[in-house]
Each structure stands twice: as C-alpha cells, then as structure tokens.
Image (cartoon, rainbow over all chains, first blue to last red):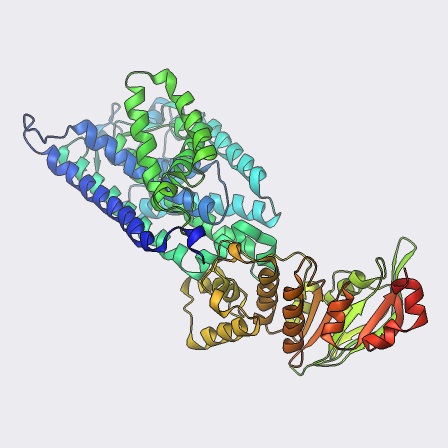
Length: 366
Length: 245
C-alpha cells in the first residue's frame, strides 16, 4: 500500500545499513589518519601533515554542519549566521591560546598578548579575565555563542519572525560582528586576530602528537554531536521540531510554546557551532575576523543542502564532500570555486532536493 | 470538571454597524450533537469565533458550565475543553498518524519534557482508542502525507479528541469529501457525541440528515428555526430564505 511511495520496503533496511556503514567506515578511516602520519615518509601508506591538518579542519566543519542541520533541517530555522557562533567559539579558544603564550611573545610581556603591548595597553581588560583556565574557556565556548543565539532568537521568535526575514537578520548579525572584530579597540587583535600559538594543555602545538590529539578530540566531538542530535531528533522533541518546521501555527494551537521550542534548539545549535570553532582554532593555528564573513555561513548551509537536510548523516557527508571538492579545485583554479559552489547549490536544489543522502534512501524518513 | 452546557443568550456582534449576530440565543446540552446550517453570512463562523474567544460579543451572555467565556482568552478557553476544528485540515505530513496523535496527547509541553518523553502503556492505549474511534487503526504507521482528504479530516478530529474536549466545534467537515467519506464522518461524529457535546456547522443537507439530530437554522445573525431536519425543511420561513432558492 505504501510501497509505491516509500520505496520497496525490503530495500529500506539495506539502504539505511549502507549509509550507516559508510559513515562508520568513514569515521574509522579518519581515525587512522594520524597513525598513518607516523609511518616513515617513504612508506606507501604515509599520510602528510597537510592531510591530517585538513581532515581535522573538515571534522570541525562537519560539527558545524550538524548544528545547522539540527536547526534548519528539523526545526526549519534557516540561520545564515552560524559562522558567527563558530567564530565566537574560535575566538574564545584563541583568547586562551594567547594567554598561554605568556612571556614567549615578541615583546616578552608575561600577561599582555603582543597586540595589546603594541597598542600601548597597560593592563588586561576585564573581559579577558579567567581565560587562562581551560575549563572556563570550554564553558565560555558554549556560553558565549549560546547567549548570543538566545538573545537574537528570543527577540526574533517572540515577534514571530520566520523564514527569509530571520535568515537576513542572522546575516546582518554575523556581518556586524565581523566589522566589530576588525576594530583594534575591541581588544581582540583587530584584523590580524590571534596567531603564533605555542601550546594547549601543556602540549606544544605544531608537533605530530598535538595534531593527532586535536584531531582525535575533534573526531570525538563529532561522534558525540552525532549521537546527541540523533537522540534529540528521535525523541518526541524531534517530532515537535518537524511539526514546527511544517506547520508552526498548528503546533501552537496544540498548546506547545513554539517560541520556547525554537529557542531551545537554536541555542543548542549555536553551542555546537561554538564548540566546533573552539576545536578548529588550535588545529589551524589562527583566528581572525574573516571567520565572521557572511559568505562562510552561507557556504556552511550549502554543505548541509548538498548532503541532505534533515538527515544528520547528510550534513556530515556534505561538509566532507563539498570541502574535498573545494580543496581539490582551489589547488589549481581558485577563481572557479565560487561559481562551482553556486552551481552546486542550484543543481542540488533542482535535482536533489534531499541531497546526496536522498540518492541513497529515496522516500524514506522525513 | 463537570461537563457543562454551552449557553448563548441575546448575543450580538456588531462590526462597523453590520450586525453579524443579532440577539442570538442557543443552548447546547452536555453530550448533545447539534447541526447548525444557514446561508452565507448567517453568522455561523462568527458564532464559533465568539465561543472560542476569538471575537468578543458587543452584548449578551456566553457561558460554558460555570465559566463566562466573554472574559477568557483563546488559550484558556481551549484549556477548558473547547476544541475547534477549522475547515482546512492541518495535520503534520512528515509524521505518521500515530505520531500526529501522540503530539496532540495531553502531556507536559516544554522542550525538556518532550526530549525525555517515553510512551507509557496508558498513553499508547489512549492513542489506540482514538485511532479506533476515527477508524484509522491500520494506518497508524503511515505518514499523514499519504492519507486521503477524508482521512486527514478524521485524523484532525482525532487530534482534537486526544485533548479530551468537553465541547467540539466542527466547521464544514465534509466539504470536498466523497459520499462514502461523508457517511463515515456522520457516523464518526454521532459516535463521539455522547461523551462530549459536538456542534457541526455544515452546508450539506444530506450530511445533516445523516447526523439525525436537532438542527438549528441561522439567518441574519439569529435563530430562524430549530428542530428535526424534517421540521426545519418544512418550515416556510426556512424554505423562503434558504432552501427555496
């Protein structure tokens, strides 16, 4: 009866299995990368530092994509400003790494980061207090993006701002933050941002051990985020989110406070994005206001669209696929990238509304 | 909460000098099934709006049991157990029939409780009872998107039933239905009345006949005639303004 619409039922479990197998195999082979990196350089299986660093970056992007998918794919909240939450998490971690440089900076000031000495500042601003403590930084990487999402989300959802209007507001938010972080007097290093990090948790960065540790940390966070998002979307809360996405006013008539529901998922999503940003900065060794650029947020949404929105696995798949294409293409034709990205988005919207995952499980799920 | 009667006395609603309701008086007893018919502009929808708190009367009394409905807002009235089914069915296409009913089930509505929600035996029985009542038990695991128009209407009625209403207001339930679906709907509404009052606003006289209950004819904002379908169909005033045309 339903077979014609949901696809042959006997194929469904195997398709889901293929997808899950693909994901597990992908994560497992990723986990091998730092090991292969330690092989002698002339070994056929040797993996360069570059590959480890780039893959670690993609793992962080995958967490960001998951965060976007939770809000957009399930609750229908299309944020075009998630790059801002990612960058804020990155800045929080950057502040920690700056504090850990200590007297090893160019100016040798044990307290003040170089850029503050350069600006002639005499003491650490109050909002830099506490950032030498790792647990505090970890907390802030969640709290700062969560707080911003809470304020923006509360104001928008309470006034019932939805759809494209909300997307535009979030674009403006990330753009405004970019302009603010460019200013030297903000106390976040102006357009240079933070770099020249030395160590994290006593481990000198720029060693194979540190890279491997950071890579595994990112992978663990990705696995944890996948589990968390899956737990949420499979609960009744997940079904409420889908209902809000498809017919919000009807959900309100059922007695649900949709403002509260949307706010909860948006804040959680921003926190995940912040955590991804905090992992990203020690991996790539720099954070600057460019991370807030509106294009970054849009690109992240395209990863999710390409992978398949509302599927979680698709977000991860999309982040890896699009970034792989980007890395490959920009190595020989960087000017083409934006055209390819735009074309990819149009093609996916027209021909693959459920993304790459839609190819694998036609009609199944939601 | 004891089931109450719905009581409208001398209710008038004036929009910019236009009297949408003109001294309307109506009593619906607990457990009664009542059909309301009338030409366009007779005030049927305005009457529903008054009962659910969407519109305030200019004068008159509207009460349900001991509650004065003219003083309460929409959410409070809904929580008193007055459910309203709008003309256009809105069920959640991406969810299954069972999940649609589960969302409507009375339970804590905050995100945290929803996350920790586990379907109890009692909740499952309650959902299965409503599934049986609306005649969709074998469609429980199908997504709402693939239901027929009639089945979507029944599912929506089911979602109202999950909230355990004392009084159900149903607006044109059989518009666009096949004859067979119309028959099923009449049977369904007859079945669910008894435990609760049901008020049906409808144009389709065959359907009203199938309900086999007391009929109220509205015209120009007040009651023109009231009684069995045969009584009102033979009432000369009704024939003149409504049926005769």
